[in-house]
Length: 474
Ligand code: 9MR
Ligand code: ZN
Image (cartoon, rainbow, N blue to C red; front, side, top):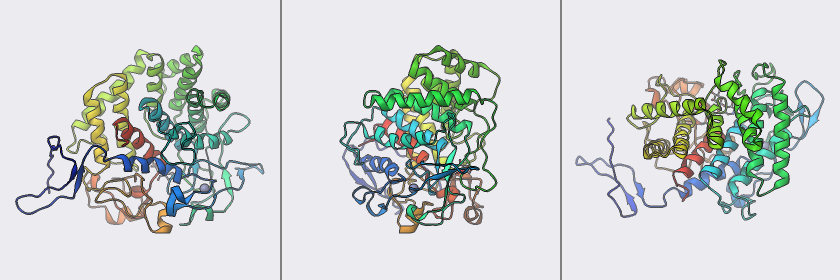
């Protein structure tokens, strides 16, 4: 089999098409039109509503995925007798854990969707629609309200709340074992500081009291962080086996925290803290992930006051490198220099599309937008396995995501971006069936394959940014 590119820009009539070759082969059907992304975009955003925890999901929105309020009990703080209320927030993924670092990435992507792409719709169909606040901020606030509960009196932020093991394949309200708030981590505290500071800016015009509360919480977290700069990264206590989100390098979280506080307050001491880390010798992980958040920091720094020379150099070096790596691939998709696909490779690809659109905001360039659109196209089907990686859309679409509600109801909840190809074969099913395949084809649509076919809030969120940035909300 070989691949060819076809350019349909000369086709001006809206409709459903397919290609036939002279020797009788036929492609799948595809649409051409002005409004082909609207349904997809809506479901990709509503996925976050469907992941809400601690509240009843309404069938008028969630359809068959409606369920009674889940995870409503108090959590015990790990290693103590203390009980706290940490209800709310989104279920992270196919499991029902709630993790601060992955939640913060998701929230930041929504914030940027609002800020950069001016996505302000108030009619997407969540319970808060029509309240005068853009739905994307309402949805983000559902997570922020939970994150505020995850902050200890000392300013530090608990890393996560889960039971001690992953849930069985049950609906969320059926997971009733003791919830445990896991120890404070610097990465969670740094990310919390950043998104709370940014929240204080964005919500000011809608709810000044909430904005003030966020700023206060952010400053308190920053103080904790400043006193704990040499703490090491989070690792699971011996008797907890849920998602770990380990990350030993938190200089990137520290600069992100300082950047957002600088942008929220204008206080120069934060700028000094940012520059000290950027110019220093310590390792900083630049990225747009749950672990590496440095590009969020650099971007908001540059947007706020132009940033330092070093900040611009670091950011645009990465942008240039990304463009070269994309040009090097037949599908026009970003692939790592080692040609491997990581767990959640679809997030990395969505993130690269995001990065290019961010670059375009700072320094408009039609090529950035074009290469960003290629990342969207890869995720929606222009890839080695021919899958539209979003459930419910496309001719070939994941039917068996690793997502407990979908597994229980035996139907894929729509609008979820699955992890995608993972060349490292990181679960027993993938090991058993994908070994002989090329790296980009190591994908299996099977609910057992959690390393290829799980879904997460922070894989959907860069797709939300990417689609809205490309004008694909309709
Ligand atoms: O997305 C995470 C991926 O980058 C890691 O390689 C993987 C293993 O540590 O964990 C992924 O995160 C999972 C988390 O730990 C628990 N909820 C589901 C997440 C997606 O699979
Ligand atoms: Zn829940």
